[in-house]
Image 1 (cartoon, rainbow, N blue to C red):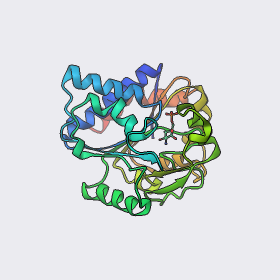
Image 2: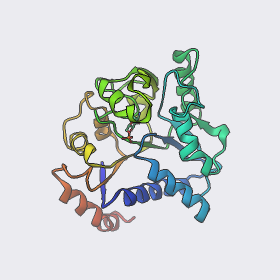
Image 3: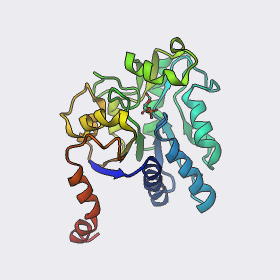
Image 4: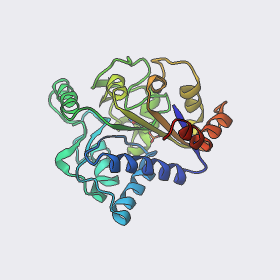
Length: 263
Ligand code: GLP
């Protein structure tokens, strides 16, 4: 994993938006996996700015969101469908026909999950998947204990996740107990992965997932097994990492390595 530590949330967001923009410029019909939560809001704002001010073109990309709460229709303000429209899609020129977000109010979740997997396969897989990380180390809604081989499916949410996400709802009882989520297996098949995290409350889990042992109890550790995973952190989320000096040295001296391999 390549670890990039930015001084602030704003800079973390700029670096990750630049990372995504580079991939879109390289491949105009990029298949982009998207995440929700507070963490990527700054990145999405910056992508919208790059579209408005620098003409970054999203018209040919396809997007797949990681997850959605079961029971919430797309127009519900707490649904991830709504979140995506509100924080990104309405600001860019993405073709809505190429936007996929799991449907929380589907009548047959199991059949829907199979269909979702088939759509990802049909477009040739995800080129770049954006991830945040939950307080218990989950990616998507892959709670502790999720198999690294898991595919898109219905998952029951952990107590900690319900409590963490209660801030978006009027009452904790309103937080759905189940979600549709891409599996860990689905996520790690993406050609590239970019995980972003910020804030002191993520520092412990960030250190565990980057420097601790690989375990299904912290599903983000699956990224240690990926060949093209990048993690972008702000200073506070990186504060408990033991090998910070090394990550910074590698980042600052990347040009030497690139020169050595002729790139
Ligand atoms: C939710 C989402 C995750 C997200 C996590 C962290 O549980 N399912 O995809 O990464 O929250 O959210 P935040 O960025 O708000 O900390």
